[in-house]
Each structure stands twice: as C-alpha cells, then as structure tokens.
Image 1: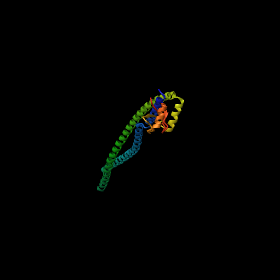
Image 2 (image 1 turned 135 degrees about the horizontal axis):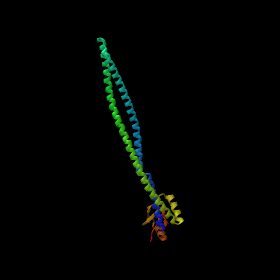
Image 3 (image 1 turned 120 degrees about the horizontal axis):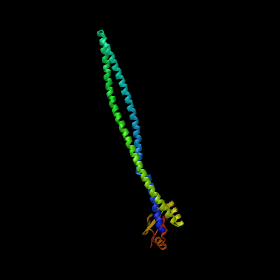
Image 4 (image 1 turned 90 degrees about the horizontal axis):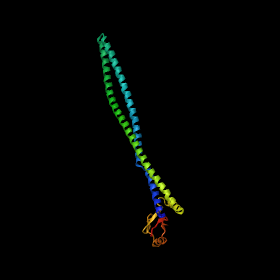
Amino acid sequence: MTDADALRRLQEIDLELLRISKEGRELPQRAKIDAAKAARKKVDGELTKIVGQRKDLEIELNDLGHRRRDCERQLDEISASQDGASDYRAAADLEARLTTIAKKLERIDFESDAVTERLITAERAEKNARGLQERLDTETASLAASAKEALLALRDRQEALTRERESISGSLPPELQLRYIKARKRFGTVAVETLDGNKPSACRVTLQPSQYSDLKRRAQPVDECPYCHRILITDFS
C-alpha cells in the first residue's frame, strides 16, 4: 500500500469510526426504550390511583354490607317482637319500624349496586393497567436485548477498524503521521482530499492553471492543497 493509499484509507477508517460512534449514540432502540419507560412511569401513576379507588370502593361496599346486616338483625328483632305485640298501637309501631328499615335496605341495596358497578370498572381498569405494565416491561427488555446486540456488533466493527488503523498509521513515515494528525485537528473529519481533474475533492475550488502546473511539475503523490491546505493526494502518472 502506497503512502497515498494509506492516508486515504486512514481517513476512511476515521470517518467510519465517527459514524459508528454516532450510530451507537443514536440507536433507535434508545429512544424506544425511553418512550417505554416514560409510558411505564405514567401507567404506574395511574395504577396507584386506580388501586386507591378500588380499595376505597371495597371499604365502602364492606360498610354497606355491615349496614345491611345490621338492618337484617333489626328485622329479626322486630319480627320476634311482633309475636308478643298485645295491642294495635304496639303493632302499628312495629309496622312503622319495619317500613323504615325496609326503606333503609332499599337504599343500601341501591347504593351497593352502584358501588359494585364502580368496583367492577375499577378492577377491570386495574387488570388492564397491570397487563400494560407487563407488555411495556416485555417490550423494554426486548429493546434492551436488541440494543445490546447492536452495540456489540458496533464494538466488534470498531475494534477491527481500530486495529487496522494502528497498522496503517504505523506503516506511514513519522512526518506523514504528524501531518495527518495536524490536519485532522485543523479540519476535523476531512483531512485528506484527492485531486479530481483540477478540483480538490474537499474544498472543490478550481485550481488556477499555474497552481495545477506546479502540482503536476512536482508530481508528489502526497501534496498540499494550495487553497485549503489539506493533504492532497494527486496522480499524474
């Protein structure tokens, strides 16, 4: 491999390493994992509210059950008292008490039906929320595994390119190594360009005839762009 080819390949490797680094930072799985975690957090908050509502409804329904049993106990007591009622007045009083308790029971049953309906709705919502939690957890785990696999593949590619880079860089004369390092610091990603006709491939400034003639006269495979001063690869063979 010539020095010119080595410099070109060195730049290709550095550009590829940058792309790999960017790809690793911008893995689509990362955004999806963040979205799934945000959704999980939202579901957690909603579930906390739902569970609280469900428990309150259970307490309310249990209280209504106690009230109903208390009314039923009173009915039993009144029924027993009716057997011993000695006059019309006592019987009428017992009848009035029975009517009052019957109305209480009717109201309790009405409230119990409404609370039971709300409880069923809350339990269904809780079940759905827990199911969504499980699906989000499964999705997050799957995305994490996919991201890990992708990162491992990128790391393998990165390590292979790094080894190749070390080999190529070590094959260059020290002065060219230093030139490349300085050019990268100055120009960033594109430190090496190739002369394409009378235009360098990076800066794309058309060379003056005299500048082109100077390059052609020197015919150095590794030269310098007279405009941007990047490393310029030429081929006048």
